[in-house]
Amino acid sequence: MKVFHKINPLKDVLNHHRSNSLKIGLVPTMGALHKGHASLINRSMNETDVTVCSLFVNPIQFNNTRDLDTYPRTLEKDIHFLEKLGCHILFNPSVQEMYPYPPVVEFGFGEMEKSMEGAFREGHFSGVALVVAKLFNLVKPHKAYFGQKDLQQFVIVEKMVKDMNIDLELVCAPIIREESGLAVSSRNQRLSEAQKALAANLYKALQLGQQLLAENHDISSVKREVSNFLSQWQDICPEYFEIVNTCTLKTVDYMEDGKEVALCIAAYIGSVRLIDNIIFKK
Ligand code: PAF
Image (cartoon, rainbow, N blue to C red; front, side):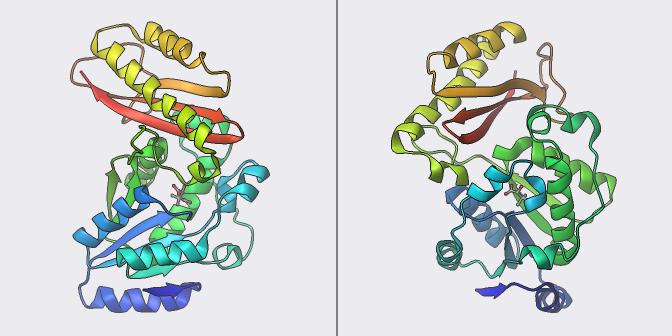
């Protein structure tokens, strides 16, 4: 695997691959790689000729310095992980390389960023959009791979790609779960075993919500039941549970046959903030 810390040599190699008509796949990450990332890398390796994994903890998408400071950083382990998967290129720039001067560009996504993650993490999606747009411009991938776990992120990136006519195909890959149902996440590394067991109840809460929707319970009673379910554990501090339209991310007031919704949850387990979701259609 070739490792690049600088933009120009990365661009040279990718230009060469592109001139040989090779298809490039990009998997943007912030490192602390796990089997969720492996599924994205594997998919890219199957569907394209050259897989680039970017590993960059993007400071401008964190609205909380403690969250940024404690974000797991495991570069050596990540390099081994990617080598074992057969990934072709790792792009691991410094903050200085990505932001030689403070960026002034900001993105706005209207209503799409007002709810859920956007409501609790001010400026988060502007920061995500800027770094993703930069990565798309630098790598010029044919396909880019994101995980469904960050569903709001995916829908917003998809909107940015459409609005800006960025010429690439986006792939949203399914959530990978532990046996307990806990969605795999880099943040799980900061959980104790007991906290991991507790965190698995977030998926159970989503499953309960899904079951109630399938049984035709109305949205407000589903929300109430899910909230009651989670209130059994005082060490789970829910931030939101929303049922949203998967295209617009607008909160849904009632279920329509054939329309897909996402049940989305965020909660703190100790000081670790976790998110998860399930997509459901009646
Ligand atoms: O999902 C992530 O890991 C990050 O938000 C991303 C897409 C790599 C941008 O920093």
